[in-house]
Amino acid sequence: MHSSETLVDLWFEDAVTILEIGIPALLQDFKDSLITVEELASEVVVVVKIFGRKILDFLFVDTLIGLLSGLLGVMPVEFFEELRLALGPPPDGVAG
Image 1: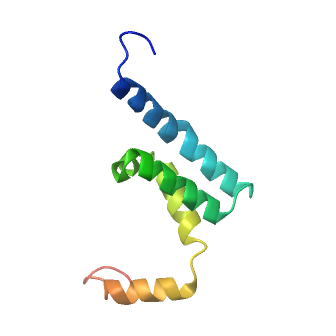
Image 2: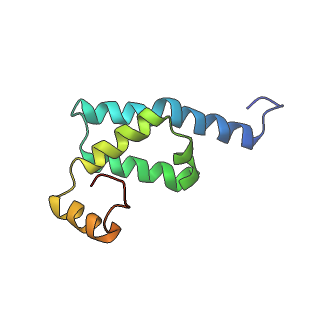
């Protein structure tokens, strides 16, 4: 650590590296079938435990969409049926 760097600076650098390189690399490993969806989810949980849930607010949109589609893509049909029931009918004017 350089004398002018603080622990906050290092934490920020680590968080940026995770956001820009780490999570996209995990997502690519999942797409390439190098890791399972369970491993992907587990790694994301570790990141959230270290940096807090708010770190996910700073993911690039394409990374977030990739994570969501990867995780939702393996959910059983019953999950979506329960989700639809929980959310109720769409508002007027919205196709459902």
